[in-house]
Each structure stands twice: as C-alpha cells, then as structure tokens.
Image (cartoon, rainbow, N blue to C red; front, side, top):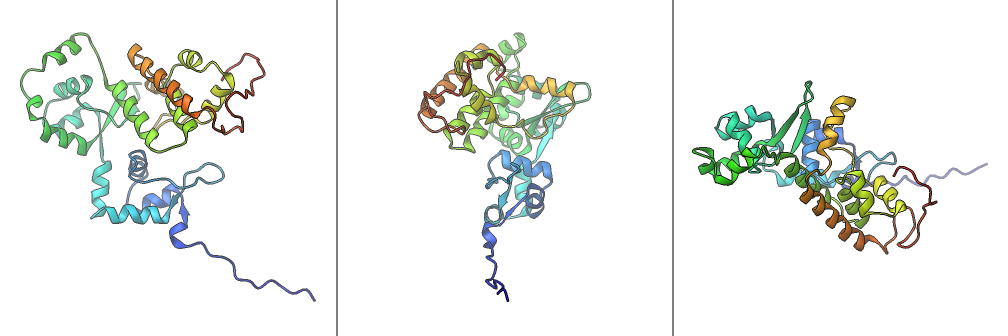
Length: 278
C-alpha cells in the first residue's frame, strides 16, 4: 500500500505575502488612481512582479506605508491631484490666467496629464504642492510678472511639457538601480532619430526598447488621443535633447560590460546586420 506524504505544506510569512494593485489600494484606503500616484511618487514600493508582469506589493510594504502615515487621509492628501488651470488656480487663490502664466514659465511642475475629448492636454498638479507654493512664494501670486516671465510669455514659451518630462524621468530613475533599466528610461525620452545616433548598436537599442517603461498611468488608449499624449513623452527642445543624449551616453558607459537582460555583454552583438525597426 502506497504511503501518503503527510508533511505539512509550507506557509508564507504574512509580511512576505504579495498582493495585486487593486487589493493593495483597498488596504491603504486609496482609489486605483490615488494608489497609482502613490507608486509613481515612490511612496509605495512595488515588490517582485507576477509571472505575467503585473505589479505586486508585499504586505510588509503596505504595513510600512500605513505606519508612516498618522491618519489614512494623510496619505490621500499627499497624492491628491487637481486637473486644469481653473481648479489649480483655486488652490493658489489666483485667477486661471495668472496660474497658466506661472505654469508655462516653469514655476509649477505637473505630475501628470489627461487628453480631453477635444484632444487638448489637461495638466494635473499635486494639490499639496500648490498649497506649499502659495505659502512659500506669495509675492509671485500678485502684481506684475517678473521680467524673465514676461520674456517667456512674449516668446510663447511653454515649459510644462519639459518640466513634466524631467519629473517623470526622475521618478522612474529613483525606482531602479539596474544600469540597463536606467539607460532605458533615458532612451525612452529621445526621438527615434536622436536615439539611433546616440546608440548606433542595434542590439543595444533592442534591449533598451524591451526595458522601456510603460506609458504613465492615465495615458489614453484611444489612438487620436494617444498620438497627442505620445508627443509629451519625447524631448523636443535642442538643449533638452542634448541633456538626455549626454545622460544616456553616460548611463550606457556604466552599463556596458555588465550582463544585459538578453545574456550578452558589451562587445557581443546579437544584431544580424539587417536594417529594421528597433
């Protein structure tokens, strides 16, 4: 008669249990969008992903976040956003036109964006940051604008996309120490032509494309709106492009010589020599 194995099944310690985004958001008392913002800001750190790539969060991490916040509404206040100039202006106690000038001149940095039904960009701002700015810079909320601001407005400058890209890239870089993943973050901001010049090795471009971060939370799925949003993800001013090219070149210098995710090392190219998309 066959003897059955009666050894008890191993149990995973509670602090090591991984849960999905929806459950993690619920346990922290946040909506899905609020939780996504908390992850984006680095308030909540993701654990090892599931086999399919879905994000997972350790119970210990959720406990850490809860213990760091004195009240559940404190965390919600940190991730609260307002959309558009009218709502953001109310947080500052100014009119929409003044707020738009301050934002376009780079005094305030968006945390995200939406594309409305008219295919116009609606910028999102952290409410807490707006309130902090109002308390810290009361002089700029009234009176005539600074000479530098007037010059920017006369030139029809709009620094919001560039400021957002810089913030977005910085937040992504804070979430990984892997040299190839960091290089992929920088590469994702460069237009295709600039990327090919900076990274002439096709095999390396394939690796960078495979490791590229997904579009930010809220990125539209409708093709027409997605085309508008896609332009926000790419550097467009010459000095901005130069900065990202230089940063990518520096990052790749550190990454080369270390094993790539495809198993190759610096100097080992998997390229067949055929021309084609990266």
